[in-house]
Image (cartoon, helix red, strand yellow):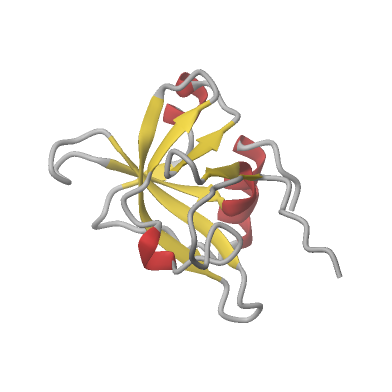
Length: 129
């Protein structure tokens, strides 16, 4: 049986479980950039759908200093592409469009199970729900 790499992963020559299978904690803090190599933020949290067991969102922290004044964005996992060689994620999005995404602060998280919220976020990133 031949094993093929997922299409959204960049190969790595390192030994170990990744990039096809990785511990979520190893991704926390990874940078997120766009295809123009502009820094968008860093992975703050990974959200799991407890009914399906799938990763649904990466919470990306943008701006601020040492967590103060940062804005959080729930980014659908499917729009992130792992760049395992550079240990970061890449999104196909303009920086301004990302900064205008529905966001929240660390003290006021949205109800990520609310269908209206899901539709708004997915629509912003060009996904259908």
